[in-house]
Every structure is written in structure tokens, then in C-alpha cells.
Length: 274
Ligand code: NAD
Ligand code: ZN
Image (cartoon, rainbow, N blue to C red; front, side):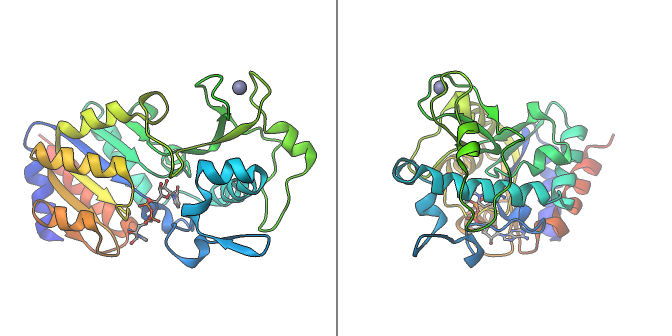
């Protein structure tokens, strides 16, 4: 841990942005399952599905109400969860570095927002479970899922009344969850593709926390930051491919994010004090 803190101190003394890149592991201690464990599985009819099969446009096209049921279940789990010390630490960093810090998150659970991470410094690159949008793309806007839409339990069906609420407010066509599915591409208007790439290319320090390095834009972020000469730090309970990259610059911490992030943030904020 000490060598990681030393790398953070040195990096913030150099010009460039301070970035955090978070994944599902950051919310694991808030009780939200990652996609890795067996809690991630979901049964439809007689079959068990892995999240990578369900979080696809293909699955939504074939069985929209089963996919919606999975999202409404997960939305309920997230609404009952509370932000943890890792989320709170990142709010502190954003406030301490209003011009220099940005948070890039793959999480769709809204916990960074609910902890208080400021919108202009927070980039949700995989969407947000509390939002929906037009399934036919009649407009780019996102809409809150109406409050009247209930939380679903495992195995619950979506009633006809609720189906009627899950419509595009503009064209009345079908709505879909505002998330990036595994068979879809990033873009700027909905998922901040260009902005996030630009941020990464000007990084002095990148703190990665709780991601398994399975998705494309996080890879671009880490690669661009490495090319920019940033110190890269990886916080995760397990080894992962980003850890190999971090090992050759800032270093790795193999511990829960909620335990470690407050100390890392404290060190960065202290290093900035005049
Ligand atoms: P992932 O499930 O693939 O990996 C989670 C990572 O977190 C693993 O590397 C694991 O070792 C690590 N981890 C587990 N507990 C941890 C802890 N307490 N502290 C630190 N690290 C811990 O998640 P991912 O890499 O974010 O990518 C999967 C996709 O799943 C993303 O697209 C994301 O949008 C989506 N997803 C989001 C949520 C959420 O919003 N909370 C939950 C599940 C999946
Ligand atoms: Zn529409």
C-alpha cells in the first residue's frame, strides 16, 4: 500500500488530470452483486441466463418483458442499497479538485450520484438503471423510469398496467432501459465516448477500482492514460488484467475498495495542500 500512496503523491505533483475509473466491485460492499458471482444469474422459464446473455440488444428484441423484469429487479436492489466509504471518498476528491478530477464509472446503480458526486465531473459510460429511453431512438433524451413502476422480485411478471408505463413519452413506442448492452457500441451523446477518451489522454493519475477489465471503453481509458505517462493504480480484491498494467506504474492494492479508497483519497488531498 505504501508504494501506491507514494506513487499517488508523486503523480498529483505533475500537471494533468486525476481520474478514477470504477466498476461493480466498488458497489459490492453496498450489497449490489457484481456480474461475476452466482447471484448474477437470472432464471427465465426453465433456463438460467448469465448477465452477458441478458444484457444484450438481441435478448431484448427476443423477450423484452423478461429483460425488463431483470432490470426492474436490479433497479429495486440498487434503490435499497446505500453508498459506501469508497463512493464517499470519491465525492471528497471531486470537491477538492473541481477543475482537475473526473470520475468515469461503469456502474449503472446510481450510487456515485446518490453519494453526491457532482454531475459535471461524473461520466456514467454504461448508463443508469433508473432511466429509460426510446427503444426506436426517436429522440436521444433519457427519461426517469416512472415512480409508479414497482420494484419486482425474482420470478415476478410485469403487469399490463406497468407495461403501459414503459413507453417512450415522445412517440409512445416501446421504451428500453438506458444501459449500454454488450452487443452495442459506445457513443458521445449517451455514453460520453469522446469526452472520456480526451480526459484519459491528459491524465497524470488514474485510480482504477473494482473492475474486471472486460469492457472496451475502460480498456481505451487505461491504454490512453498509460500512453500519456499517467501513474496507474489498481484497487481490486483480485488480480485482473488492469493490475498487470498498474504493476508497471502506480501499483496494485488487493483489498476491498471501501477499505482502501478513503486512504488513497486522503493521500491525494494532503499532497495538494499548500
Ligand atoms: P464485474 O462484475 O465484471 O467485476 C467486478 C470486479 O470487482 C472484479 O474484478 C472483482 O474482483 C472486483 N471486486 C469485487 N468486490 C470488490 C471489492 N469489495 N473491492 C474491490 N474490488 C472488488 O464488473 P465490471 O468490471 O464493472 O463490468 C461488468 C459490467 O457490469 C459493466 O458493464 C457494468 O455496467 C455492469 N454492472 C454494474 C453493476 C453496478 O452498477 N453496481 C453491477 C453489476 C454489473
Ligand atoms: Zn420514441
